[in-house]
Length: 169
Image (cartoon, rainbow, N blue to C red; front, side, top):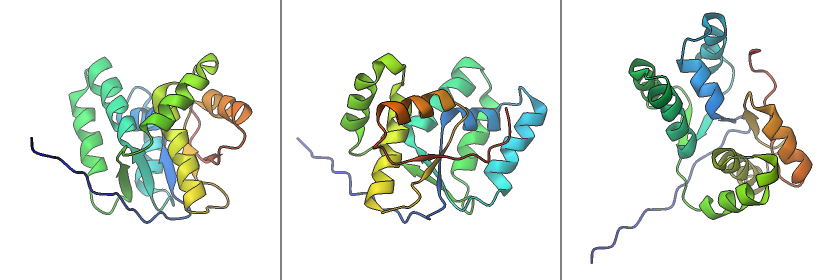
């Protein structure tokens, strides 16, 4: 039987990189609230953030909300075009080895209602912050601060911060 091998993934991480959560991408590509949409688009396209890190699970979940739930194919295509536009500082992070870590974190924190994609984000943030010795730890841009504070309470040893310069929702 033929064997498929995926090569190791290596990426230079800017110390001011930000991991993006699903809700930020959905808000930045769905025009439900025109004023808010413009603010998030500015954040994604013109802010001083040098590098956006987006786990594959976030891309899939965003597509599900934008195209699956909202039936907004145009916005879905715009999201994929933005992710693949050179010069935007977007890096999609494949999920190579943190599946079991994220799955365990999600099970462990079931009482806090932390879903799998959030577990992927915070597992990745902790891993990047630890392996790259980032101080302060990498920031996560999210509007779901309930999950952020629940995780900080349940697992204070996880290394990540909240990106606090998002436009208000």
